[in-house]
Length: 66
Picture 1 (cartoon, rainbow, N blue to C red):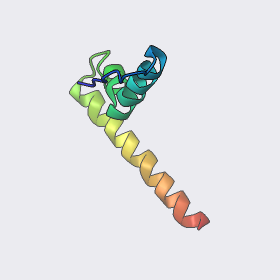
Picture 2: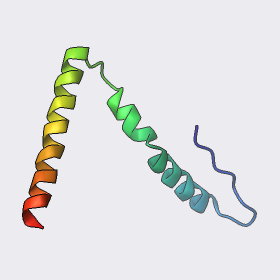
Picture 3: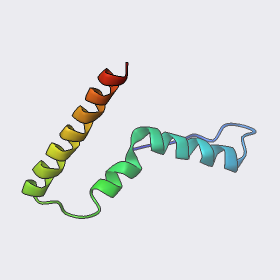
Picture 4: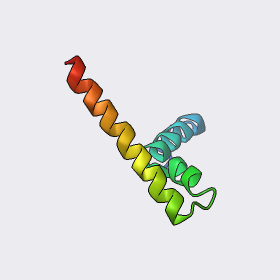
């Protein structure tokens, strides 16, 4: 769980900005979006396979253009 202590003399806006940065860094919002809907195991495998293929194409493209 992400927590931010408000420092002496720090405004609430600054503390809120630090909190939002920590939430993004921890990946909390990405995890919430990922778990928003149920994904069946077969669909999960399919999505992971597509992601793996997409990343492989990116690596292949990077090798060609270097």
